[in-house]
Length: 220
Image 1: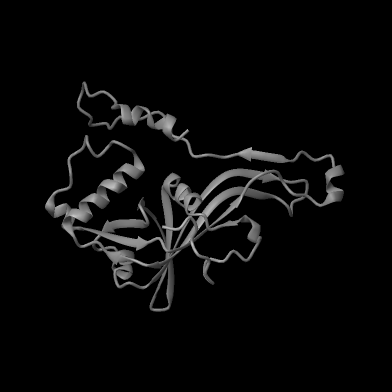
Image 2: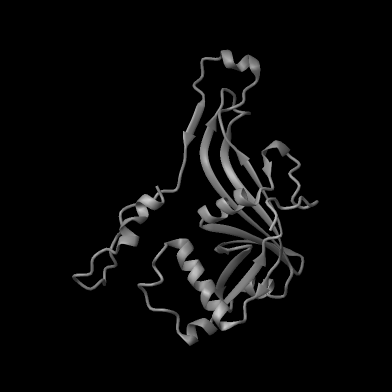
């Protein structure tokens, strides 16, 4: 496995190329931190972009859902797909309206997905989804039944054509605007988890498990 993804015509960062990255570790860190991806595809000349959960296992991105899902049924035909993931790290407030921006980390992936039709591999994929959302949850809950597995479709997308784009730091104003009496800087933004809220039908005497109570710290 190479340290970098080879740039392609699709993944080349054309706008502000200095913000682009093909480093595999950087791209994987972004994928592992985010929770939602957007899947872009075209069916009968109609473009769609659908948000969905995902997981990464090695050099593969996994997507799953109902076997009746239009998106998954379309992707199962091994059509071209574009998957994006974005993390917002800050709102960048400049001295001019034009130079306002955001600090972000994003990934774009191109490829063709394939159906995971092996029952063991499908089960392992569902475990990966669970672990990506909240680590250690799988060991505590009821595993999927055979009927549930049959109603679920899992797709694997090889991570072969991907790039990241990242912005960090302060606003970049026109030189003459630095003399303006306008506050400028960055408002940090991050995904946080609140205190766990018990289900209304939770049986009495069941404590909050450690992997749930510690999730707030994990996502802080």
